[in-house]
Image (cartoon, rainbow, N blue to C red; front, side):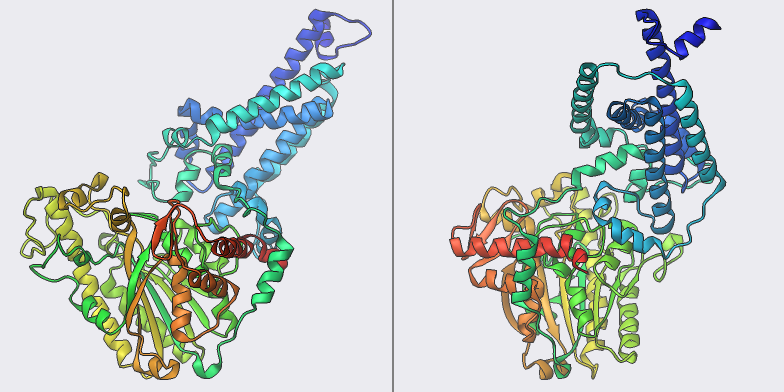
Length: 627
């Protein structure tokens, strides 16, 4: 017992290398046990929204477990080296990790949205939002902090190891930095490691299953600290070169924002159709259809302003086209707080703004992002479009009539209406082993394998159903006495077999090796249609060819057709188009004066693009800070 006391309470006045070594080993062992316990506590809170099988599953995957525990060791060692007191390592690691775990816990409880490193940009906004929630301090939370304080007090008296000289302390600091950097970039941000550690297949007693398409489930199945650190891969958005917040604010002010006079206000409904593309554009591949799935769409094109979007995506990534349209951004941002958008412009003009999507609100975090972008009202599967489980997610034959109902309710409210809706029908994959309509072939499939023939015909089957729904929808709006303008566009080309096998069998070149294959890969269609009342008010017949451009320019095109001035984002993008730039692709391609290129040639156009990028960064990142 006496020797144990000497190990615990090392006395420098009686130096002994053996006692000093044992003293440090005792302290570090206690700290290691503590860090492991705090890590386990963070896993407990991280799985609190799920059944306890998820928590127990973390212990079955060694790599996943230690990826969640090691960060606690790092935090503890930072405190130890910084303050040279063991009790500081206990208290600092316990408080910081537990507080972060609880923020994640409450964020999941209230918004079904996990904590990401990018949320650090919105601390003040989060504080304001949290004031509106009823935060309940559970006994588990109280006990956790009591234990942290109690153990830290014990560490103050019994864990007294410290560096006696500066050299080993400084050396330890450098080693810790090097190890953390190596671990972070070598493991925590590596996508292949993240994919390997997916714990999505946990079996729950109730039969509940985690969804691989649910970003929250994907996060929580990996614990807490590990997915939190992994989120840092997309946490920081690089400021445009030379970006200056104050100068950009002055630039936006200089552009100004034009108002829409009351006598020129019309209702707007924008619908982005899932995986919608008119394959008859490939005339050599589809010279004709056995049954035309685009019959009404082609009729509609004849009375609309039409063209093509050059999207950033193919067969997936819906939100890229979606958010570029309603924000004017040239690239997809991960919105984690209030941001400026065209939605806010319409709201500022007195419009009632509404978003509709029959899919789940958690998908792409739309339930939060649409609020961040300023929509006054949003509807999802969970609150409006719920169907019996066997029916799945609502198809267009029900979704479009419901959209008409919402439109009628908005008109009754007396405010002009801005609606943006995203359909779900036609979302892939499409069955390869059977035909949805065995008695109706849209294309014979000559030269196609049976699986490819089924896939392409099943795709056209859904397109036909959408076409019939569009006929009912537009006929109703055509007869409406109120002015309404509709924007209709596809988000991306559809998935047609793994590795695009159907495209290959059809002879559609998606190699991206030349201009033609680039457009074959990225193009979709858009149209802008107006009923007679809107045409009269706006003095435009909304017909003709509109050319092609990136989704970020679509709202600019709409404002031009309506004769609206718009805000700074609209104006800056309009100036860029006037300088000949109309495609800005995340693939690294631009189109200037009709030519695809890897860089913008004109110095004037480059300068204008820099202004556009500054404005979009400000709208996403600094707008909320300016109040």
